[in-house]
Image (cartoon, rainbow, N blue to C red; front, side, top):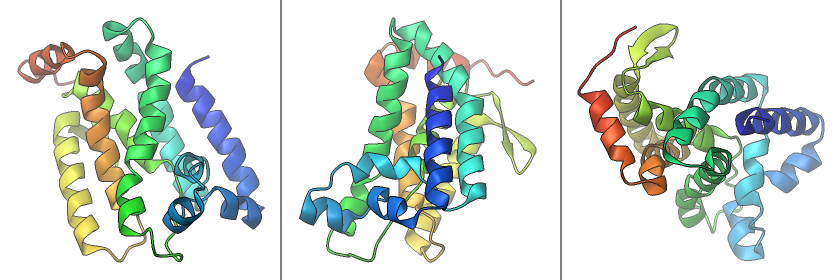
Length: 204
């Protein structure tokens, strides 16, 4: 089965159960303090399977489902094990998008974070890498993927520095950057695909 679909199904099941069980959220949520001081490293991954509410969950899962199949196809162009690489990218992005929090908030027992946004951002930006002129919707307005990517990174960086809205913009930023470079980690020649697609715009 498509790994994106598997992740979507598992994440929805765990998130829905967690909506009714605060103790499960407490066990799975990312707490840098608990990770660093009590070595509960599993939280670095498990926090991606729970969400704050239905809107948070649905937004992430729709994005993952929408872009995941395309990314899996693209990975097949440069690797004989696209499924494995999809899982590797997704969970590595979950980890990498958490590093900033682990360093900054390691001594703050009150800081908590949850959701798959960092990993989902990686999937979206991998799709942009392979198809930079593909259409991405911004509030239902069609936008070339490469332009969306620039706007998204600038916005995430601005909101990260501004703070105050309880959204983990650092996870979005680092997950996005990792997802964009991951194809080149798989196969350095993948950069040729990006350059070719970038200099040959296709508008649909």
